Length: 405
Image (cartoon, rainbow, N blue to C red; front, top):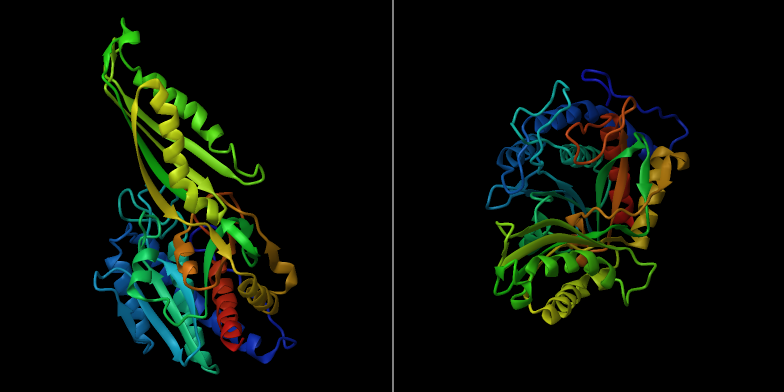
């Protein structure tokens, strides 16, 4: 949406639409204004990962108003709710957490929590999932279960997707989908891609140790800062040595700590960085690759190296058969002109953990502001709220097609 208070754009539909699409379009348009208010309420009251108690409660209360029974996780953050029943089940994931960013945008629904805001669209995802649950309950003309997963802590490692997997929420699902708002894509459009759509993002810490000493006698000790500099310079290149050059692997250091005086060679130094890549098999190998290369670099220079590797989320790899259903649903709901084949991103998304159990797809939802560019995780982030109606419509038709398959 543009400036605060502006009316969201309404979808045009005509008598040439199939009966189901016409009905879903009407229902999505009916619930969208209410879901915009839900989104604004969540936006005003953001909660960071594992702290989404109010958000979870508000979602659960709305579901109960519609006689949809939610199951709230024991910790009080995150919940699951189903519409319909039967041996066929399809999942739809929405995330709930905000980011520790101070909001600089000034809409009427700006965050009232200092230093916290919804800068990644999770408030939008939650509103779309709620609206889709209502639409499918009203439509009711289907067999099977539409299961809605409202996930905590998407932005944290380890995140809420892993916890919900442990809860068993994917059990019995035949497919699962999710949206992520795309502030570079015009509202009213969706972006789809078969195969990899997001990358893995892992973190690592390298701790170096040596005897230390005086800078006047570097030959009698181990210069840890020199070792650290070699690792920072060489590791990003060496990691690619036996990897297909067509594969994207990005190793970047963000922190180097060591030493407190100009004339003292320290006994300890610490480096921190990230690894981002697309290939799932390579992602599984990466911890051993990093550890081996660091040991090979530090050892000959006399330093001891310890690597703490923290896997984040695997790459999201969209299932071809699910994408075909998403594309057919989006084409029926929006028209072929509003479907875009989207790019891969090295940004991570823990929706990937659900895909370890169930074939699925992450779909980009156009939400670009008409008057100014913004980016995800920006302090000025906001969306065109007409994207909520689009999301509800496409999600509803997608779930029904997956249940029918």
